[in-house]
Amino acid sequence: MSLKEFREGCKRWVRFPSTKLDYYTFRRLRALKSRDVGQAGWDEWFKYITRDIKLEPTIHERIQEGTRTTLLEQWMCNYAENLINIRYGDEAKFIYPSDYRQRTLIDLMVPTPVLEGEDGFEDTKEVLGQKPSYGYLGTTKCKFPPPGTAVVVGRGPSLFQHGHLQMLAKAIQDGSYKGMVIASDGGLLPCLEAGVVPHVVITVDGAPVIKKWFDHPLVEKHGKLMKWVASVTVNREVYQTARRNGLETYWFNPMFDDWRQNESWTRLQRLLSRTEQNMRGINAMNSGGNSGSAAWILGMSVFKRAPIALIGIDFGYPEGTNLENTQYFSSALKIANGDLNLLRKSYPKFHHPDFGTDAFVDMIFYHYRQAFIEMNQTTPLWYHLAGGTVNATEGGTLFGPNITCEPFAKFLEEHKT
Image (tube, rainbow, N blue to C red):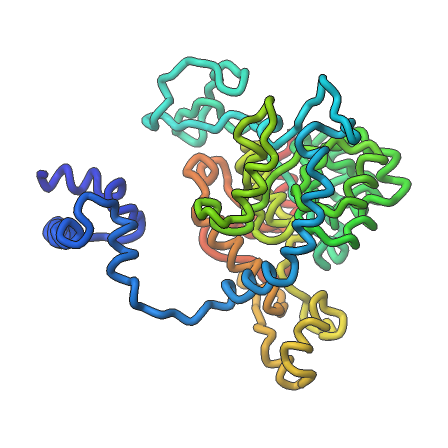
């Protein structure tokens, strides 16, 4: 192998996109790998050389494991109750109809943008029933350019503090904003109360309490105008309430664990959801652990929207909020053995460098924040060229690499149609 071949192919061989190795170091590593595991892949070799290293679980791993331990039984029960409708559609009863239709994320999928020079750019075949269209992202030519912008709506305090939904409603009504609106289930009622009917609503949580977001006259009035993307582990009463109010269900399989393992619950869910129409089962999607992050993932990975503005996605509490009023206070107090002084020390504080606001987080929101930042770092190049992620909350704790922070009014002005 020449030095030129190494430099061009190292990312593909070693899968270290952010690590620089010189040519001779790489050759030495390859020789060690061949000695230890022969022709097996790099992943197998890394597992081999680190097999005796014991690690303490990170806070994210502890939260994930705690979530699995606490909620798995509930999720399995929800999944079992939903399975007939997951497999055979919303109209299925105890005997599924012969003309059933299983709806999944794939039914909503938009072709992925392909930049000039990338694999598949020259291919003129249809993708997902669409003929290739072309445009530019800056100066870069793109096949299947993003179809437009999106606004993702959460339910954080900043949503109400700054009147963002009223601003959005006005922009939609006067025709200056024609992009997509994707709401978390918690953001649904505030949207409807402000006169904004989301194109899509998403539910991740399997708890029965989620029913309150759908059991409302406004949802009944506008339900048929919205698509509902629902986790296969959504609570049965939540599903029935949403369906009764006219929402059309599109299922997804949340990434609960490593689907490559034989004992994986994610893998089992997918296998059980297979039908004659869909032999691969319901597609899996990383949800980020909450419906706000999942709405953003949906906008980028399924609808291929960019830029995506976030409102109400705070991942924290404004300075001055009483701990007793935070979402996970009772659970955190148990972990602290009832010691309120100790608990206060476990809430990291953040000063937002762009908005000049102060906020704090509990362990759960800290986990959500870090997961979002990590996911945003792995988004494709076309997404960044088209504008990427715009935090328009004007508060909260979300900032970091590749996240543009600006007021929502500025976003709406920049993307007038």
